[in-house]
Length: 257
Image 1 (cartoon, helix red, strand yellow):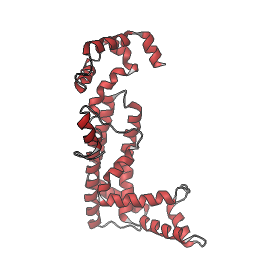
Image 2 (image 1 turned 60 degrees about the vertical axis):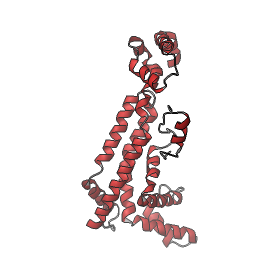
Image 3 (image 1 turned 90 degrees about the vertical axis):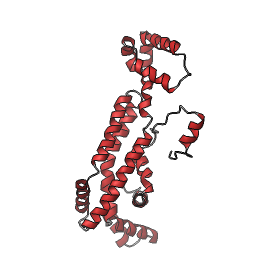
Image 4 (image 1 turned 180 degrees about the horizontal axis):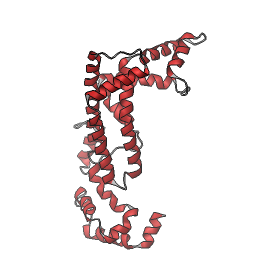
C-alpha cells in the first residue's frame, strides 16, 4: 500500500510502531509491479490495451492472435461489437509501442516470476536466501537498463511483426520510457521488501533447524527478535524455553511430522 503520510502502512504504524510489512504471497509479484507502474502514462495505456486482449481471448487461448482478429473483422456473421473490438486489437498488434512493451515486460517477468516462486517456497525458512534473490532481482532489472537492450527489444518486435518501424527518434523515446519503467519497478521492490531483512528472527522457529540450534543457539536471530519487539519478551525465559524445544527429540520429530 502506497502513501508515506496517509497510506495504510503509515496509519497502522501510528498505533503499532513495530509492525513489519512484507509482500503478500497471495499476489503475483509481476502483476503487482505492473500495476504499480501505472503512474507512467504509457504503462497505464499498455495495461488497458492488454486487458482487452485477455477479455477477447479468454475463451480462445490457443488461437493465433493476428489470424483470430483478422477472421473476426473479415468473415461475415460476427456482431458489430466483436468486429469493432477485433479491429481495435489488430491495430494494437501493429502498434510499435504496444509490441515493444510486450517484449520488455516479458523480460522483466522472467526475473520476477523466479523470485515470486522462490519466496513462496522459502519465505519463512531461509530469509538470507530470500534477501539474496531480491537483491539479485534489482541487479537484473538494473542490467536491463541500457541502450543495447532497448535496440534489441526493438529488433525483436520487428521479428514479431515486420510491419513495425523503429527509427532513431522512436528508439530514443522508448529508451527514456524504458528507463523510467525500470526505475519505477526497482523503487517498488525497495519499498515492498524494505522490512524483509528484519524478519531473520522468524527462523528461530524453523523446525528443520532445531537440531543445529541445539548444538549452537541462534543468538543473532534471537537478539534481532528482542530488538524488533523491545519490552515484549522475558529474554531469559524465552531463551530457556527455546533451548528446551531444540533439545527435545520428541518435540522435533512431532513438529517435523
